Image (cartoon, rainbow, N blue to C red; front, side):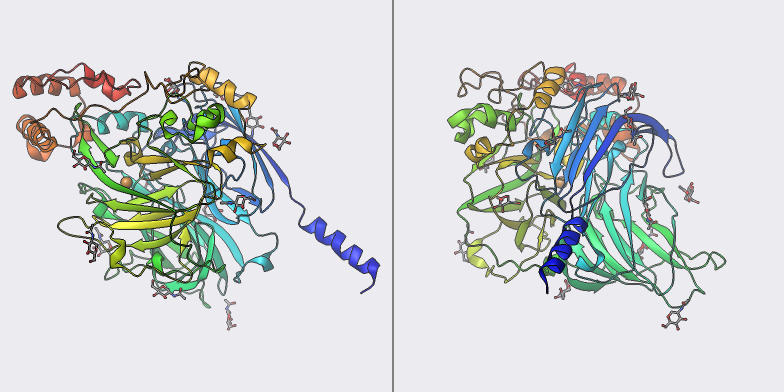
Length: 621
Ligand SMILES: *[C@@H]1O[C@H](CO)[C@@H](O)[C@H](O)[C@H]1NC(C)=O
Ligand SMILES: *[C@@H]1O[C@H](CO)[C@@H](O)[C@H](O)[C@H]1NC(C)=O
Ligand SMILES: *[C@@H]1O[C@H](CO)[C@@H](O)[C@H](O)[C@H]1NC(C)=O
Ligand SMILES: *[C@@H]1O[C@H](CO)[C@@H](O)[C@H](O)[C@H]1NC(C)=O
Ligand SMILES: *[C@@H]1O[C@H](CO)[C@@H](O)[C@H](O)[C@H]1NC(C)=O
Ligand SMILES: *[C@@H]1O[C@H](CO)[C@@H](O)[C@H](O)[C@H]1NC(C)=O
Ligand SMILES: *[C@@H]1O[C@H](CO)[C@@H](O)[C@H](O)[C@H]1NC(C)=O
Ligand SMILES: *[C@@H]1O[C@H](CO)[C@@H](O)[C@H](O)[C@H]1NC(C)=O
Ligand SMILES: *[C@@H]1O[C@H](CO)[C@@H](O)[C@H](O)[C@H]1NC(C)=O
Ligand SMILES: *[C@@H]1O[C@H](CO)[C@@H](O)[C@H](O)[C@H]1NC(C)=O
Ligand SMILES: *[C@@H]1O[C@H](CO)[C@@H](O)[C@H](O)[C@H]1NC(C)=O
Ligand SMILES: *[C@@H]1O[C@H](CO)[C@@H](O)[C@H](O)[C@H]1NC(C)=O
Ligand SMILES: [Cu+2]
C-alpha cells in the first residue's frame, strides 16, 4: 500500500472513531404521571418530562451531565450503574460515599469518560430510596460500528421492567422502617411496569433479528420474562458479552441487565404474548388484586387477534452462573484478601428491623468516605478513620479479593459492587432448614472462564463468592440492590487503594464537591467519619447504629409481642402494615396493651434520625 493511502485510511479511521463529548443539562423536578394506567401520583422527571431519556454514548466518549435539583423538598444524586469510574471516583454518585447529597436548588456536574466499557447500563439517583419515584433511566454504550458487535442483528431497542408503587418512597419508608413492621416486611407494589407502562404493544417486522437491551430499573422484585413461541438468545449480561445462549426465559433481578437477540417469524398472520411476571416468592403477602403475570404484545400485524396470557408449566429460566464471557479471563489467583460476611436481619432496640453484614447495619458517616480518603493523608489506610459503623474495608492496590457472602436470610438478594465486575466463583443452591455457609475446602472452584457481571443474586440461606482484582483505586459501595434492604443497612464499603486515590491527579476535592457539602451537609466536607479534621483517630460524635434489644428481650419476643398485640387490635387478617392510616391511635393502644417497661429502647445513639425514628421516639413503651 502506498504511504498516501495509509495516511488517508488512518485519517478516516481517526475520524470514524473520534470520541464525542455529550452535554446534558437536566433539572430534576416533580410532575404527575400515571404509568400503570390506574392511578396518578407524583413522579420525578427531568425538565417536567418522564420517562427519562435513554442516554446513548460510544466507548471513549465524555459524559458531562449537569444535574440540577429542582425537587424543592428532597436531596438528590446520580449514579451510573456499572461504570468503573476509573480515576473519576467522585463521579460515582452514592451520597455520603463519594459525594454529599445535592441540596434543593443546587446542582452537580457529572463529568467522566467511558474509555473501556460497552454494553447496557442504567443511571439512577443514589439518595435514600428515591429512584423508584422515577429518577432512573437506561444508559447505553454502543460499539463504534455495528460490525464491532460479536453477534449479528438488524435492529436494536431497549426494554425496561420494574415494579410500581402508588405511594412515594417518602410515604412508604417511615411505615417500612417502623417498629409496627417488626419483621421488616417490604411494601407490596401495586403493579409491574413493562417499559414504564403496561399492556404494551411492541410492533415488530418479520424476518428481523432484534437486539433487545433489557434492564430491571426496579427497587425490589425480580421478574421472569418469556414470550409465546419465541426464544431469547442471551449475548450480554451487565455489559459483559457472553457466548450466545438460547433460552425460553430470563430471570432479571433489580439492577441487572440482559442483552438478548429475538428473531421474529417469517409470517405475520399471528401476534404473540410477551410476558413479564413478578417473582412472588419475594413478597411477604400476595394481595388478591396484584397482577403477577402481565401480558404485553408482540404485534406483527395490528389486524390480528390480541393474544391471550401465555401460560408456562414452570419458571424454568437460564442460570446465569453457566454463561461464558466472550472475552475470556481465567479465574484470578487465590485471593490475597478474603472478606467473609454473614447476612442477617433483625430488630434493634428501637424495635425496627434492620439488615446486617456481620452484625453491622450500614450507618452513613458525617463526611463522604471519599472525602475522608482525600483529607486523611497517610491515615487513609487506617480503617478507623472511616468510623465503626460504615463498615469500611481498606484494600491494597491490585490485590485479589474474595467476597464470601453467606446469606442467613430466607430471601433472595441481588448484590451489586460499584467500580468493578467480579468473577462469580461459587453460588450455592437454595437451602431449606438451617442456612449453609460457604466452606472452601468442600468445593473445587476452578473454572476456566467464569461468568462476570456487576449484580448477582444469592439464593435463600445459601452463599455466593465473588472475586476481583483491586485495580481501580476508589471508594466502592457494595450493597443489596433491593432498595428496601439498602435502607435497612445491607451495605459495606470498599476503600480501594486509598493512597493511590490520593495520587491520582484527577481525584481531589473539587470546588463542586465542596459546594454541595456546604449546601447540604452543614458545610462538613472533610475529616473523619465524625467530621473531625484535627484528629482523624477521634471518632467522638460519629453516627452509630441503635443499641441491640435489651438482654432477656429477644427480637423474636418483640416481634411476637407487637404481632399479637396488633392482631388483637386489628384482627390478623386486616394487618396490612402499609395501609395503617392512623398510626397514632394504634400507638396509644399498643402502649396500653403492652404495659411493659423497656430500658434501652431509646433513640439517643443514632444521630441522623429519619422521619420514622423521630416519629417513633415519642413512644416509650
Ligand atoms: C432542562 O432545563 C435546564 C435548566 O433549566 C436547561 O438548561 C436544559 O437545556 C433543559 N434540557 C432539556 C433537555 O430540555
Ligand atoms: C392495562 O390494562 C388494565 C386492565 O385492562 C387497565 O386497567 C390499565 O389501565 C392498563 N394500563 C395501561 C397503562 O394501559
Ligand atoms: C428547575 O425546576 C424547578 C421546579 O420547576 C424550578 O423552580 C427551577 O427554576 C428550575 N431550575 C432551573 C435551573 O431551570
Ligand atoms: C439533605 O441531606 C442532609 C445531609 O445528609 C440532611 O441533613 C438534610 O436533611 C437533607 N435534606 C432534605 C431536604 O432531605
Ligand atoms: C470535564 O473534565 C475534563 C477533564 O478533567 C475537563 O477538562 C473539563 O473542563 C470538564 N468539564 C466540565 C464542564 O466540567
Ligand atoms: C421501550 O421504550 C423505548 C424508549 O421509549 C423505545 O425506544 C423502545 O422501543 C421500547 N421498547 C419496546 C419493547 O417497546
Ligand atoms: C421471510 O423470509 C422468508 C425466507 O427467506 C420468505 O420466504 C418470506 O417471504 C419472508 N417474509 C416476509 C414477510 O418478508
Ligand atoms: C402466572 O403464570 C404461571 C406460569 O405461566 C402460572 O403457573 C400461574 O398460574 C399464573 N398465575 C396467575 C395468578 O395467573
Ligand atoms: C447455556 O446455559 C446452560 C444453562 O445454564 C448451560 O448449561 C450451557 O453450558 C450454556 N451454554 C453456553 C454456550 O454458554
Ligand atoms: C454477631 O452477633 C452474634 C450474637 O451476638 C454472635 O454470636 C456472632 O458471633 C456475631 N457475628 C459476627 C460475625 O461478629
Ligand atoms: C469445611 O469442610 C471440611 C471438609 O468437609 C471440614 O473438615 C471442615 O470442618 C469444614 N469447616 C467448617 C468451618 O465447617
Ligand atoms: C483502571 O485503570 C488502571 C490503569 O489504567 C488499569 O490497570 C485497571 O485495570 C483499571 N481497572 C478497571 C476496573 O477498569
Ligand atoms: Cu436484599
